[in-house]
Image 1: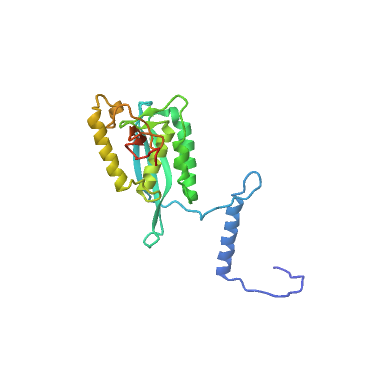
Image 2: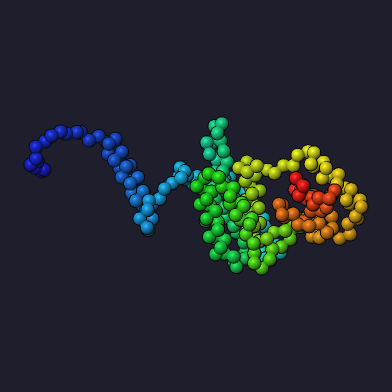
Length: 239
């Protein structure tokens, strides 16, 4: 039995819906409290928190480098936002890297977790590509078949993510206008006619002695009409 010793000013009948709402508010406060950093600052979310669906769409890319006996398999899973509406969009959600080579296990786990966290934050994630592609191995990089120089394994991972983002429409594909493409093709044929290629470096289909392009990292830069021009991406010092 409860004895009321104070004067009753007002009263309210508690309903089941009120109990459920109060429980939901308490759970939300508990979740917010769990996101307090050690320094006492509250975590500020820049975008809406996304829960991982049961099923995600993914693509797996194989990376085989001459610096390792085992290949790396990069899997990027995507989430579909606003599915079934005119605003439907496919965005990367998480990334996994699998390899038999355990020498890189620690940094692989750390890197995949950080990249996945950036994916889930949303916003412009294209900066990841530039940051990864600019990483250089102090022991030196390696050449890919076709004449492209890769400064490190991390840089090749950046190229893989760039390719995936272009495939799902998050990043635009670099395109060369028809006039420049036709000019590059013509100049390449003229150059090949004058200089018969004897032994291409790394099975490259570009002329022998071509220099490395700073834009696309392909050994395809030659002198054409008094100007250094890349036969792969069309980059030219003369504009």
